[in-house]
Image (tube, rainbow, N blue to C red; front, side, top):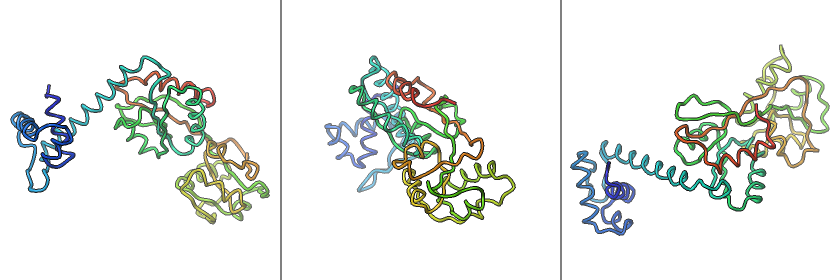
Length: 291
């Protein structure tokens, strides 16, 4: 096993760039840091290129820095596991896509209000960033719309999310031609969502490419704002529609069976969710429907 003090010195040197600043950050002498690096280089070969202003890592140094990161993540995991005696105390972190995040964030706040010992940290992110955040151990758990195929990730059903076609409350919509007349309020996933839903509702009609785009936003919480003002229709996940603050100004069309997606809860497969995290998930499931 590598001496932890040597690794701390190496990590500080990689971060600070000079032996002097590394020693100051660790409250050690420069000689002590130099000795630690010397011991590592005796074991692993050249780790640094010593430049006048800043050291540069060799490929071996980059590999050792990655190992340092792994050791730190393992240490955080151990601390979390050892501190997991009380399910109602400590930090819980979760990262989700915007639509379901809009729905669960108020519920997370209510859970924390009822359970003052918990500190809940939530972040909005697309699927790719959710997966990366969980893999990097920056968040204990995440929610994704596409089930990942990665042996490092444990997956379980979280809830269902239906796509909905939403029009202005006062709009007369009796078919495809009325939607074309209204125009489409687009968003980053808008065309894909609309194509999936419209192909089921209006088979044989022309594609979404024939529907004029009358607006666009990349903010999930604002997609229905132009719809509420009569500027077009949109297709959004149900959680986004349910979170809209002026439901009286919009209307959901219910032409046929909706398109329903499963959402998945993910966490690192190497260890189970903490009792705190499982408590939060159990509380959320009181209001969310599992697939």
